Length: 307
Image (cartoon, rainbow, N blue to C red):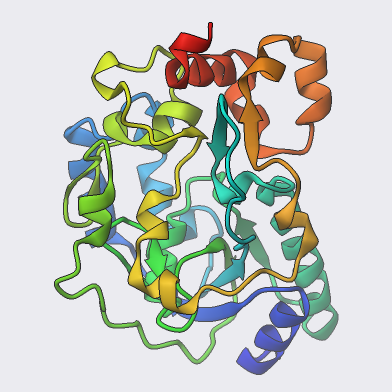
């Protein structure tokens, strides 16, 4: 039978930094908070968040007979920015390299194959930030960390620069202890957010979030945010950059796939780029999610005087 030790060993061999285990119970309180967030309209144009609430609450809908949830965290911190040239916008660190959905998805498939070599009756499904699974909630329940005031999961030894993956399976384990919330009185992330997207502690209004406005947003960027993006053209890392846990515990990733070369977006280059060129350059990059039209919109918003 598969054990905690085997899972932890195989997961770390695959490159995961932290491993945690939780019983596959209902996420009722977390789903109720999500419903309040949705009713307030804080999800903005992300209408998909309104769907599949039953699956978000009960992983047995996704895997009948589920007994445990394994939460995995992988460090992606690629370092700091070099000086940013004029008319260039910054890219969120998570998108400097290859798209994490594919990279971590492949690692999860390989991990499950190796687990099944030891336990042929092991049945599991996994998620990497793409399905109706509450990855952050499971990470908290599995002891990966606490969910901070900026909504990111923070680990007391590693900070928050990590991707999450969730494995739902039919085996029972020794379950991890949740981590106590260590944000305390700190409000660094709230004070640093230039668009005031953290409307109150632990609550994010996507309508004001630079990451949402530059990636998921399909419309124009509201004029009220003019000169408030602080140079971000795709995503935003401000609330992680100022977090004391990251300032103290961040460690560079040892995976070159996350370091990459796409750290800035040059307006002049993007202005001259066509769809085919954009798709070719950013084929394996998260930047492709915003499409050429969205990236040009973001850069025009940052640098209107350069048009």
